[in-house]
Image 1 (cartoon, one colour):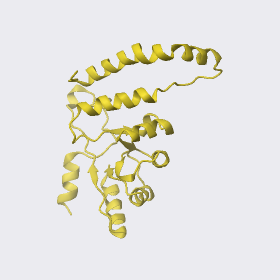
Image 2: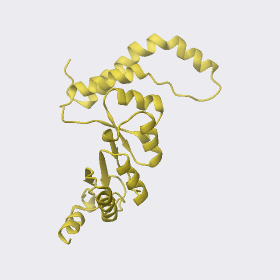
Image 3: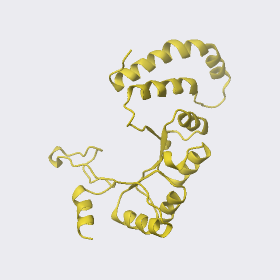
Length: 195
């Protein structure tokens, strides 16, 4: 079956969960639920692998999937995601540590998140992080300074704020205020043309 949309992928996977996985383990799951004293999560890592394979098979080769570590930094989950060839998106030093403990090579790590100190940027360079997203001209200046000192040429993405029709009252991220992530395209252009 050729899947043509993300909704179709989700629907197919939900059907698999409902019919195969749950039926197979229903008795065990009920036993665990009845005996558990604390709340818990059940993860089917075999199903996750199959789900990732389904998604990857439908995408062109030039798309490189990344998992947001902040969604769930559980070690076994990250190891499973890594084993299927996905990269990881980190937004903090703690997430970087978790990704490294789970075996991710720096080249498969994307560093996002608005709060990047100079010390954190240096650590990203030291770990040979594959792609670093900068949010401000100050972060870009720090990263450039550190890269020159260490003779490194990191791959960098500039985070650009999306334009929205202010008359509609809300941005694409919700709310009416300018979001704190990145700069407008005009601000980035000014930064590079004024140097």
